[in-house]
Amino acid sequence: PRPILLTRHGESRDNVRGRIGGDTALSDAGELYAKKLSNFVEKRLKSERAASIWTSTLQRTILTASHIGGGFPKIQWRALDEIYAGVCDGMTYEEIKKNMPEEYEARKKDKLRYRYPRGESYLDVIQRLEPVIIELERQRAPVVVISHQAVLRALYAYFADRPLKEIPHIEIPLHTIIEIQMGVTGVQEKRYKLMD
Ligand code: G3H
Image 1 (tube, rainbow, N blue to C red):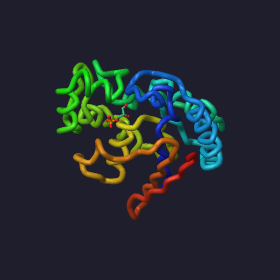
Image 2 (cartoon, helix red, strand yellow):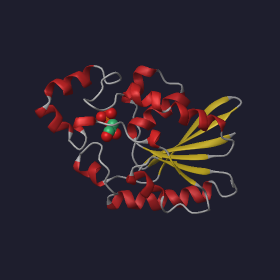
Image 3 (tube, rainbow, N blue to C red):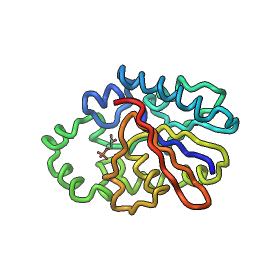
Image 4 (cartoon, rainbow, N blue to C red):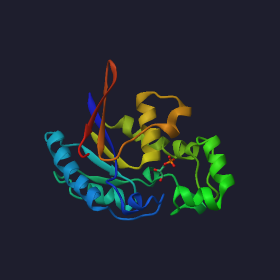
C-alpha cells in the first residue's frame, strides 16, 4: 500500500476576504500551514525516494508546496486548478447573490450541474480530472496532491467511493491532510489537522 496525501492550499488572501477564484498569495496563517506541511511531508515520506508533489498552476498551491524539501519532484497540473467561476471569478458569494440572484439560485438548486457563465461546473471539473486520476492510479510511490476545495471534493469522492450527487457538498477543511491508503483490503483514510 502506498499513500496519497490530499490537501488544500494554505489559506489565501482571497480566502480571508471571502473572494472566490483569483490567484492570490497566502495569508500569514496559510504561510504557517505551508511550513507545517513541509515538516509533515518530509517526515512522512522520508524513505520514499520516488514520491512526488503535485500542485495546480495557481500560486496558492505552488507557495504551499514551496518549503517541501527532500528532493521530491514538484509537478504542476492545470487540471488541478480550482473550479473556474467565469464572470463570477473574484466575487464574494454575497456579491453574486446581490448582483446575479438568478445565477445564485440556479447554483443552489443544482450545484453539481450548474455552470458559471463562461466558467465551469462541478461536472466539468470531474471530467477534466480524469487524466490526473489515471496517473494517480498508475503511480507506485506516494503522491502529495496540493489543490483546491472543489477539485479535492471530486478526487476524494473518487477514492472514498462517494456518490456523484454528494461531491459539491463534501467538506474538505483547510489546513488538514487527508491520507488515503489503497491496499488489497480496500481504501483506508486518516486525517491530520495541522492547525486550528
Ligand atoms: O472557490 C471555490 C470554492 O473552493 C468552491 O466552493 O463550490 O462550495 O462554492 P463551492
